[in-house]
Amino acid sequence: MKPAFELQRDAFGRLTLTDADGMRHEGVLPVRAHPISAPADGLAIMGPDGHELVWLDRLEDLPPAPRALLAEELAAREFMPEITRLDSVSSFATPSTWDVQTTRGATRFILKGEENILRLPGNVLLISDAHGIQFVIRDLAALDRHSRRLLDRFL
Image (cartoon, rainbow, N blue to C red; front, side, top):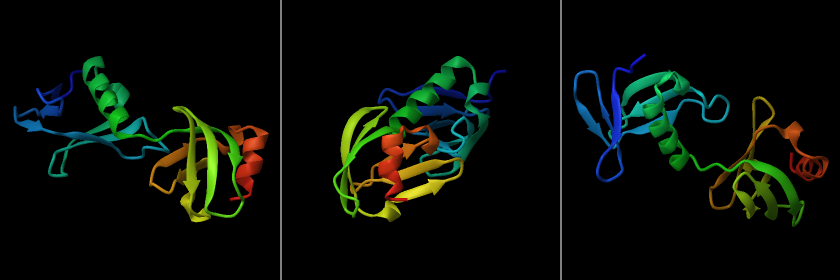
């Protein structure tokens, strides 16, 4: 099925959408409806003014070329490393320094307070560091025993 719009990059690398009426919208941004709990479902393509131009139920329903452009743009915008292991925590009182392994490599961050750990449905945790960078733990139960023990002190 061919979508009722066309996506491409302009000379500046910005995403451009041409809608079914032939109107060109420059600098559009894809935005997931539920980036953590349902990243594959519900995606809006927003104009630079913040208005929705296109709604997609599933990114996978698109042909390969526009799907690849949107996936590339989302990957650039959505920097949210997934914590796969907690190596150490400097203190069980906050603020504390955490040494962790993520899908993007090893890193260290400062947790200002327990309120910066948000529990989400499905055993998911969202952790914000002192600089506002968000880390996700997609399945608390899937962490190793050492990591769960360290994390239990903060939950």
